[in-house]
Image (cartoon, rainbow over all chains, first blue to last red; front, side, top):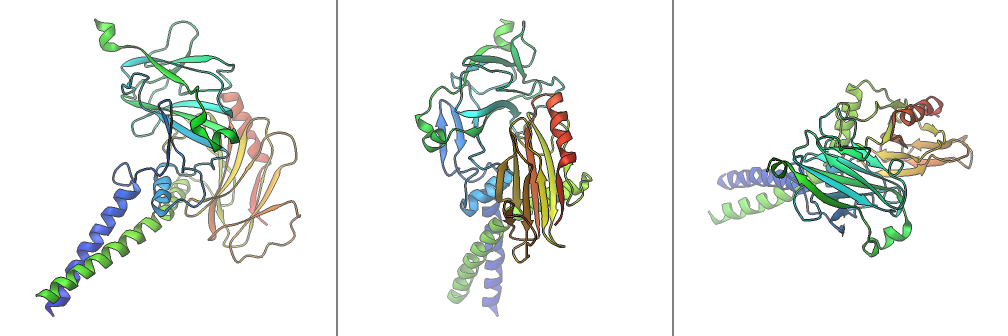
Length: 200
Length: 175
């Protein structure tokens, strides 16, 4: 009879361990399983497994959690940037100039999300910049909590605290998809000033 | 005592592996089911295209929704037979995607440029599809539930209204 108790206790402990490990690896309890194939271009990182067929069961669960209804890679790829060109975290207290040129896609956009992945709760109506608003071979816009002076394009970081910028490339060039690391010229993020510097 | 420890170790390992795999494999369906519930609670009917309001901090419902896109969604209920999806072409970038109930993107096509509307029949694995033209794509889901999603470029209010207006020309109805 005693052996049954041991077996039962083991089953309960195992079930608990199995549940917690599954939730940890899928990202429901933390940031999730290590991404299978990271592509990093000039500070912009992308999980190259998103939007592909038959990822493993862990990545499938991770994608369901963090990229629900994501498009196939031939339609869109996503890059994320959490730091400026000097390696400092992007934060609401600083102003940045984002600049770039032509990108390997039919259309692109850059959107600001808070650390939880949501649009920051403000009413500025300046959430992103896309290729229709920044056409041409050279473009730039400012990211800051307050509007820039003049007519410079603006993305508001108000109420974001720390944030990331997400670059979406829609209908990316097949050559880029095949060999993304051969590409250069992704947007640069130059820190203009921070509140503490303004005060000094 | 030794037999007890062996039983403990074996049952722990078997239970841990079994529960781990069962949870991991069911998570995508669970997450999709919650998405269906959220859409239903928002008042969206099955087998009908519905336009989402323009994405803003106040209207966002999921992480990383794009404020530059107009979204239209149709929750697919195939329990009474296949569903015919149509989506008109628009002047700007757009796509029609179909997702399984475990979040797998089983079909995607562009809906921009000139030309006739895109026709797609969505069916469950065992459903017969008859009476459709050879040009019509037939998509098989793994169950009788799924989701169709149209995304269109809409970086300003005028384009969002134009994209939303196209929904009146779209169909998501039993075949």
